[in-house]
Length: 219
View (tube, one colour):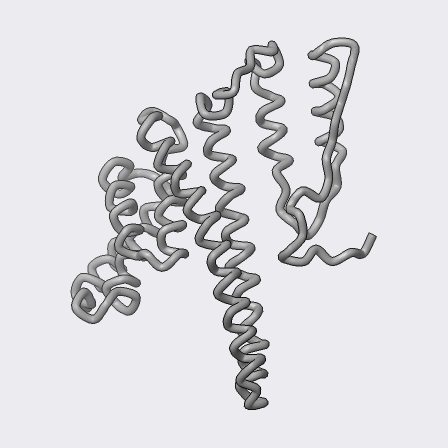
């Protein structure tokens, strides 16, 4: 309806409930309802909910409070949602830079301070969601060693560490990715991260042009 969703809005914008003659009928209606949703401009958990509904155990009514935790694919999708939420708050924080620059240009110290505090608060939210995503990725790696999407888990975990300003932790994950999954699609990106770290991202004592060049060549 043209409303703007501010950073302070309740994250649940819509809710769907379904009923039927029995549980399978209710599940079928829920699947159809989710398929017919048309939402643009914001991240939703519709793909995650569809994955839950498509699970044979869910359709059979074989449910418990640990249903999601026992399924690495669902945990992975949940972590992806958390990571997307973290990225959203990161972009929102960066948008405040325009306000900070304007206040600085106007010489308005009060507005500049207020904008800086706003940015810091948004970055706190980004870190919170990023931490939640990392915890889920770590849980999947620890509990589901044979999960077929483990390379995706490791790559996204490394990305989450990198995005929150912990490149050394990210490189630790990428190192494991390169060692344990040498043929996966993220190898070039992992080596590129090493190159960036040794070339410009890492502290001065870690910068090494030879290591950076070697990593770029491998990438």
